[in-house]
Length: 66
Image (cartoon, helix red, strand yellow):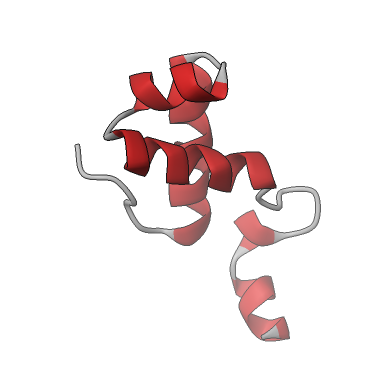
C-alpha cells in the first residue's frame, strides 16, 4: 500500500479527503443532486459540487452520473 500512495500524488499528506467530502457525496446521492444536498447540509451548491469533484479527482472515477 505504501507504493500505492507514492504512485498517487493527489493522496499525499495535506491533500487527504475529509469527512465533509464524504458527507457531501452521500447526501448528494441521497437527495438526488447538489441543490438538495446543499440545502440539507446548509452549504452552498458550489461547495458540495467542489467537494465531490475533489473526491472524484482523488479516486480517479466519477461518483455521480450527470
